[in-house]
Image (tube, rainbow, N blue to C red; front, side, top):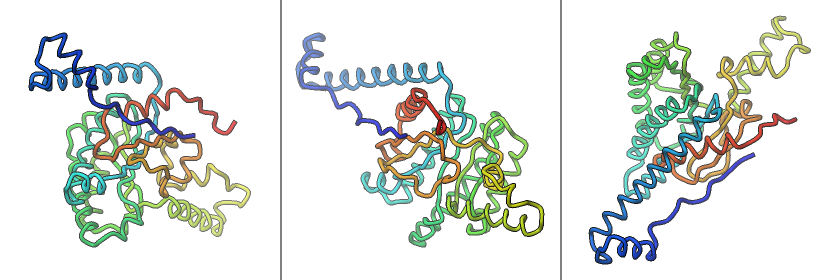
Length: 291
């Protein structure tokens, strides 16, 4: 089941501007009207955001939210920036998302940051992304917020495909937070869902060969126990930005009963109300788990 939201509301209509002008006795088209129109719009937006947050907090939220962060490069192109700038703004958006998850009580956040297919991009872009990963994993390990909220930071994926400095930064963040269990922040990097399943099958095959597992003992639980996320609940909600409606090889085994939500906005442009709408959509659904 999936949901795709409608577009955002437009600007003030001419009739609305005339009503403001008559009410406040302002000359139509003046700068005062533009300022008041903007102020009223911002006030209405903030009131809506507060009301939406209150509704979200009044009901159970997803325990595990997984996000496909899509649209950094297209956002940058629309804004006349280079792709690296788009990725940097996308990184800042992830900082906001972490705060929103803490505010709403979402315990597990998994984000799709870099797929194995992304390794096929230009060497310059891949190198720039690797620099960002090296910086940001180390920053996560030192972040005061990480330790105050006891957030365990972890990378999932084929670490051997990453440069040594990125691997070192990942180990740094993981070691500094390995004892935490209040919140979990997982970054899928050099990750592919099919490869994850193949990895699990290979390990189970080796165990069967060595007599540690009987064929009749192989079930869903055993496969799940050999995945990167073996100690975490499956995602309750998968959120994808950019308007694309596909999974792109992300958590293929784990999303069997996940709810899907596609936001028609590029990742750097995701607003708090977009995030809250996704949670509200999840809260309104009845999860049947195939029953």
